[in-house]
Image 1 (cartoon, rainbow, N blue to C red):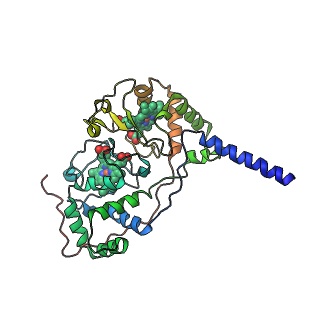
Image 2 (cartoon, rainbow, N blue to C red):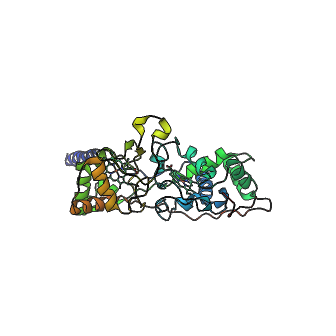
Length: 331
Ligand code: HEC
Ligand code: HEC
């Protein structure tokens, strides 16, 4: 009898705990299950391989540095021939949770996205045929592609599929905020919790919600007050052609935001203090006091999760027939 009562009260406590957490606008990031480890391992090599660029110098990791929150921490990215990119590089961490890829959502998923930078003249400046030719000339890659895909010919679809599979492993669970969501009430300080309540009560969660605290909708930058961007990008209108989508951008994830500075699509905000101040003003018509701003920033810093932890891949050497790179080729 007593045991039954105990179990019943445990069940109630357990379910009410779960109910409380599911009532929050933000959910914890689930631990990733790697469906095909050999595919992801190949994708990891490709992510780090600068031979996918024309210069032989730029890899995905150059602009999405996994030692720096999956970004380059630059205002806008530097590409081929020191090309100054037009837009800030978003993090690849948790990017599998995005409703689509790029600030304007022009790639439907990670596989479609991965083909873009290889052939973008301002980024890696190669082309798909050349990238495949390079890989096909490296015996250890040919063997690994064969092991994973079962054919002798490397294709760009296989390249982008492998990179996407690796990117799907780049999730960051176990942040202090997630621990709090899961019931560890000591995981946050009073200051951080006050920041979370301000974040919710001010309306930030209207756009920054779900497990990635963003990434799941397009929203206008400058709802209440126009935002003067230092980049020519116009957002989602470039994809839909609809005037209503002008200056709509994919809401960025705020996971690991402490590491992914500078902020906004034009990289104009150097600090979280500045980004929070701008968001309050232009999105919500709210001016945070210094104390409130510090609380929201303290909360945002609790969103840093476990960073990807893996062995640095060793890339197979080129063969005598591998096309040689051209670091100083004209644009
Ligand atoms: C020269 C720097 C540079 C290189 C190299 C580069 N990227 Fe990017 N990446 C960017 C920039 C800048 C954007 C944003 C572009 C935009 O939205 O218009 C971006 C966007 C992305 C996104 C979308 C993220 C989101 O939240 O929308 C993913 C995923 C990504 N890159 C993965 C890769 C992969 C994989 C490679 C290698 C094949 C790569 N990138 C190479 C700079 C780079
Ligand atoms: C109406 C939707 C909306 C609301 C409300 C909103 N945001 Fe945003 N947030 C966005 C969009 C869209 C961007 C990207 C804008 C851009 O880069 O031009 C963004 C960007 C950010 C960034 C920069 C992230 C990065 O990686 O560049 C931070 C930090 C941020 N928001 C915090 C907040 C906070 C704090 C609040 C509440 C005070 C808030 N946001 C309210 C839509 C919103």
